Amino acid sequence: MNLALINIRQLVTVPSHGHRAKLRRGMLDLGIIENGAVLVKDDTITWVGRMEDLGIAGLEEVDVVDCIDNVVMPGFVDAHTHLVFSGARENEFAMRSAGATYAEIAAKGGGILNTVQQVRASSKKDLKKQARQYLNALMRHGTTTVEIKSGYGLTNADEIKMLEVINELKIEEVIGIVATFLGAHAYPPEYAGKKSDYVAEIMDKMLPYIASHRLAEFCDVFCEKGFFEAGDTEKILACGKELGLQPKVHAEELNASGGSLVAASLGAASADHLEHITPDGIKAMANAGVVGVLLPGVSFFLNHQYAPAREMIDAGVPVAIASDFNPGSCMSYSMPMMMTIACTHMKMSPEEAITASTLNAAAAINRSVEVGSIETGKKADIVVLKIPDYKFLPYHFGENHVEKVIKDGVVLEF
Ligand code: NIG
Ligand code: FE
Image (cartoon, rainbow, N blue to C red; front, side, top):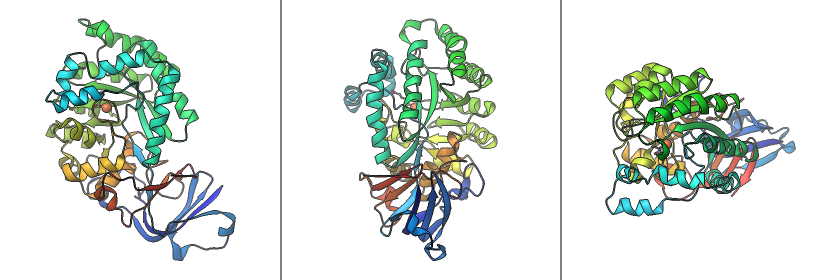
């Protein structure tokens, strides 16, 4: 199918200039074209430019979308979610608003382990049913590619069940899905007092099966005091890497635990969270080109410290933002909401927040050759917004400005 987006009031292309991600002041360059146009053939962008340079010959053969009142930008890439889960944790939310902390709730068997119990008791069919509703909602909010982690099973069978669900959704649903194995999300209760046995189970049993069945592209570890120490994080990620799974790390969320240094030493695709990252960690990530995936919604929702986005951008770390959508630390999948928080609480500019949600987010999941910008040859993953200027996206918050989403060249209207 051929498609033409014409008369675009403001086209935000986020040009990659041939790089996998944007750094420093490069993050400010949104490649804006006023009165622009985009041509699409099948699932691929074939032309991007100004209306006045667009030959109208041949346009009668195509589906035309008039964007005279719209800002058009790349579909958002949410590079960090825990979208497959069962039930919810609104009671913990209420406990936190009464003063309990996330760590206190987790130490009493709530938190991640609460969701683990519910996921273990759920069938694949039930997990898929709930996940599908969320995936549709993500698309309605402009997200066209999403990374989803396992990590609420914590047994070989239940982790495989979660990854099979993620892989089946990847085939069945329109949205682009990337699977990550997070067996090292928490120690399961049956391994109390024998943590090293669970690390061995991950390395000897789970990872070989997952790698040989191609159930995940990435391997992630929650590196944190009370969860997985830096030494075990390194062992698990190195084992995964040898089997072909690229490392990612939940690093420095509640304490400086050294996860960012592990990520840099292993050449991880990304280190995520980073609320407590140290200057050493920032330097190591910049040198190794590890994408820093910041999760503004978590700091907002848990009322935590925010990651030092400015220091990281200024030091040359490729910075992305993601939702971390999960029932505990961020019950939101709205990327525009994450952009608002990044601007209001992390001193990021609207331009940086948009780059961090598109091209740099695609880099965090090794997809920036295909998606994350509106450029000839890239996949036609595009969002059409009912706003007069891109700055309205983070500025006018709490409202869904998405009018249409184009995924792989197909127009979805809301
Ligand atoms: O990224 N930090 C660890 N994992 C998730 C929270 C998952 C949960 O609370 O269920 C996170 O914040
Ligand atoms: Fe997470």
